Amino acid sequence: MNADQKRRLDMLGEVAGFRKRHNTEITAGSKLEQFLDKALAAETEATSGGTEQTSGDGAARAGTETKEDLYQGFLDDLRAIRRTARTVSKSVPGAAEQFRLPRSISQFNILTTARAFLKDGEPLEAAFIACEMDPDFLKDLEDDIEAYDKAADAQGDGKGRKTGATRTIAEAISDGCDAVRDADPLVKNKYRNQPAVLAEWLTASHVARRPLKEKTKKDPA
Image (cartoon, rainbow, N blue to C red; front, side, top):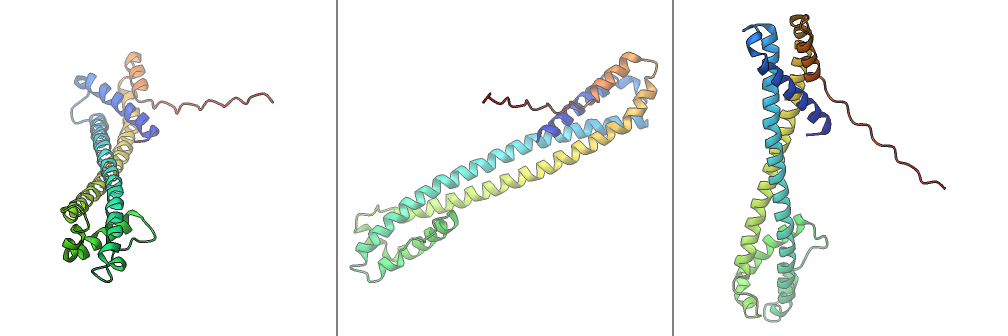
């Protein structure tokens, strides 16, 4: 939620408060009630969307961090397999060429290489273990690949939830502001002889202005 949306949401919250305080004065089923209820519903929806947006962003960040952590682990594991393959190739010709790292070590390339090392390493597992590799090195690699896939799913799900919530917030706030504009002349008509209530409405329906940026003072030459 950006700063402009936050200011408009704050306004909708004030209007919702006005609606609740003057509930008994507003005619049931009137256009004014419909407009104010629409603004109230929009404020509730946007607030809920803000919670979902924050939750989705947190899930996406967590998935991203997990992927980055696993990526470093992949690099270490694949380099160990690569080094050991040179020794394995003395008894298994071609092993050194079979286990090579890509020139580009992007996450995608490293994950693809990890899958290939896992598949190609299974028939040579005993030979690698004989070269002092951990007995569970392939199982650990498989577990890391599975964890990476889950983290990628969590990242994608979080981004999707955040995007959906962002769209919901924008639409809800837009609908709420439209409702407030529609309600404005009706409120002014209804409370034209009640200056205190009119002042309350004007305050509630006012969107705070964007704060002016402080001008940077230049140091004297």
